[in-house]
Amino acid sequence: MLPIALRFRTRPWLTAGIVRVEAKNVEVLAELYQQFQAGKIRFLLAFRHPEVEDPLCMLYLLSRIVPQVARQKGITLQSLVHSYFLYDRGMTVWAGKWLGWLFSRLGGVPVHRGRRLDRQAIQTARDLFANGELPIAVAPEGGTNGHSGIVSPLEPGVAQMGFWCVEDLQKANRTETVIIIPIAIQYRYVEPPWSKLDWLLSKLEADSGLSPMEIEQGEGEEIYYQRLCRLAEYLITEMEEFYRRFYHQDIPKTISTDESATPNQVLIARLHRLLDKALQVAEQYFGVQARGNSIDRCRRLEEAGWNYIYREDLPDINALPPFKRGLADWIAQEADLRMRHMRIVESFVAVTATYIQEQPTAERFAETALLVYDMLSRIQNTTLPGRPQLGLRETQITVGEPISVTERWKNCQGDRLAARQGVSDLTKDLQIALEKMIR
Image (tube, rainbow, N blue to C red; front, side, top):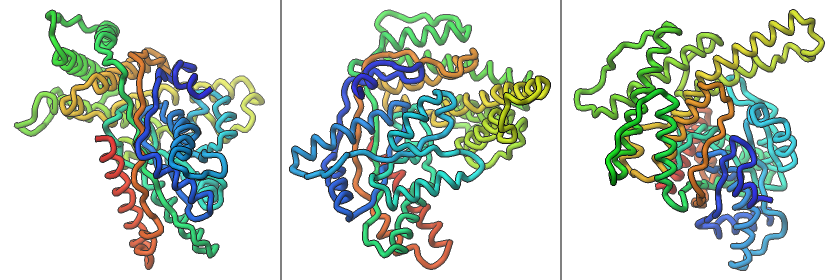
């Protein structure tokens, strides 16, 4: 069923349309599975997570490509090529309980993201890493960013899990080597979807109330860039006025930037200021402090929102009298509205001033336009926007060189400061490895 799930849209949020999955350096992964099955190593798959289709592509890599390459290279694998994996518990909220049922049978471990530490999930993942029958897969970015060509800042949890695994093996007098495997995932269209992109931009312009842009016959890729910048400036201006007027946010008409800043850099500076204000609106409502980068702030707001909507202090909400049930529903509805400010920010955390200019490909134009589509859909009361499919796509997976955690662990003994530095260094090196593979 996997090729069908990749090829056809089965859910509004799963755009799919993937007709080919290619992979590089797979023999490295096949050999690691052979060593794992022989009891010589423990390893974690740290994969990029730009799109919601990534887990399906990873499943295709493990269930089909790795066994095929192993046969071609004469690498004997004794049992199933699969992995345990971590997933955000919020997925079963917006996608449906059926997904949790499926994930639990495929080796999934739900994780509570946000302010509080999900000790049960972490302990489960730690035990599986050290003692499970399969390796474990984790997306160190923590969520999708919609960009095949940008790696979001990695969370330190993957590196920490690696060091914990070494410690657990040492305590049990076991000699397996602990390894982390970086895996990059990128998408490209089989045929550049310029005509579909023109349709999408026209739709976004019409939905936002922006007058159509006159286009001369034969104008090339530059016109798409101009249309995107024009649309972005219009929407940012509208949203600034929205937060200024209705949420009483102090947003000056001008913004302080370097004198040498280009118009595009000024636009991105305005976008980041606007995203900060949107997060402040949600943080003020939930009483959450603004700490860390935008991704960290989004995670804490998500946790706060779920706690308002799914009340742990109300074990049986159906047993409440109508009055109290009404109050609970009221709070849940308002929390859902406040979380939409955070959802808008989520869509743009990786947007930069030069992403399209560096490589003006159809893929980068499409990624940016689809993020704008997500924003407009959420504002129009569509919590799960069904993204338009612009064309058939191919997936390119690259297996990176193994990173030995065991060797690093030996140099991080002594005190907590050395241990924290070891986690930081490993996270940084993993980030660099993933970034190199997508260039």
